[in-house]
Amino acid sequence: MSGRALLMWDEAVTGYDFGASHPMDPVRLALTMGLVRAYGLDREVDVVAAKPAGDSTLRLVHRGDYVAAVRAASADPRSADQAYGLGTLDDPAFAGMHEASALIAGQSVGAAEAVWRGEAAHAVNFAGGLHHAMPGSAAGFCIYNDASLAIARLLELGAQRVAYVDVDVHHGDGVQAAFWEDPRVLTVSLHEHPRTLFPGTGWPQETGADGAGEGGAVNVALPAGTGDAGWLRAFHAVVPELLADFRPQVLVTQHGADTHFEDPLAHLTVSLDAQRAVQMACHSLAHEYVDGGKWVALGGGGYAVVDVVPRSWTHLVGIAAGAPVEPESVVPASWRDQVYARTRQPAPGRMTDGRWPVLWRDWGMGYDPADRLDQAVLATRRAAFPLRGLLP
Image 1 (spheres, rainbow, N blue to C red):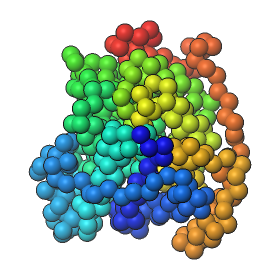
Image 2: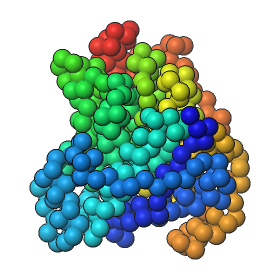
Image 3: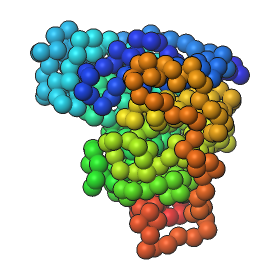
Image 4: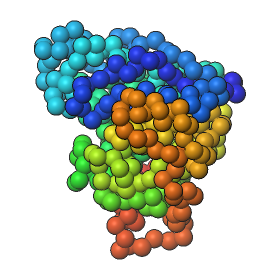
């Protein structure tokens, strides 16, 4: 197995562009890669570009009629069929939409293939993590569900146990739906409570299909306003125990940066430093519970496209590469100049929000039944853990 991590990157992924007024501005991808390069992390990883996902790969998850509808809307955006979720406010059709979406999916599938085959222990595709797309429709800024496609490809290659951990502020509903009945896949999602945020799913009681799929889905619905200490407490109260029991052959994680307190579309109050702490925890958990440390890390949401996303995902790349960027590191001036030239916005000066190290209280120290965060964690443990033979 190679000692170097892979970074999946093709400049053409920035063609995934819903338009100037849309929150998912592809500049976040270009600025992230710019910051990765400014820190020299592109020399610590093997930067590779995979082929776009072809129709046979896309059909591992998506229906053929949906892929055809995306192709048609891509060729003529005015023909987009809203019955497939295309041409909507969330998912406007644009020329080249199929090609850009298939390219992003191809990077995640390529990452999964390389990790499974032992070409690298870790692989990152921060352009991926488009976890809302369903088998037959677009949703929530997501056309093709690259996370589900990567997992489906791992299963096709022979994997029997794949764990998916999603820490985006939104529920990983598309991935959960894709593997709702499949005992080979464990999906775990920590997200803002469905009462207060799209997509309105991800309740603790959503635990997988009756029968073989029961206990295969785990959801932690966090109260709006949850900050660093609560977020980390919830993560460590749920994820490590599940991975220790499941012993996945590959760990796939989704690192949407929209949990951040500056994100304009959600209501958690998590800092960059806590996001880095969870990234480090996922890296450690991969080495502790996955043979060979096989880890595929994806991006996801994140709409503070200058202040937050590039720093968060640069930390992710550094951690996967074994060359973590120190939180107090001063952001290179060359990147700050790039930010101003592209956005006319000032760039952040350091790789921290000033909260490192982040302190939190371990679940094993006891819980407060009157605390809303603890109530959320306990609801998850009571709903899902006994189905896996674990104590709540």
